[in-house]
Image (cartoon, rainbow, N blue to C red; front, side, top):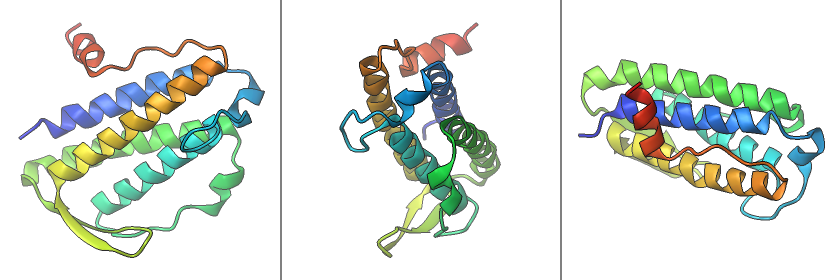
Length: 162
């Protein structure tokens, strides 16, 4: 079994590095249209926040949760802070669940389909999803003239060795 606490801490670390870079961008960069799955930095971060929020609630035994509607109109900096708070909560929740072994997590998708997966598979999905969209964010940051920090897993491992 993979070290679920370590891998979710990696996500927290990588998303925090990404957020730090996002906070340095000019205000108009958040809503600039770059294309991709979600066309702007704001929409991509909002999607990542929504996904992590859903998974946090699923890990807390709530199979489906409504996304707060006010998030659509939040300032970009506030969205980033909400996203970082959810990262911290995910780490705490995974730490609580790991001693139970590999419990099943029941969830319902936005389409209404219900599934049940072992915790290990859920956390693997959550981290993979975040990595995918973090790559999109890094690309948009480059198009906005910024230089995003590296968030490769090995960099996290090396930083942990310090």
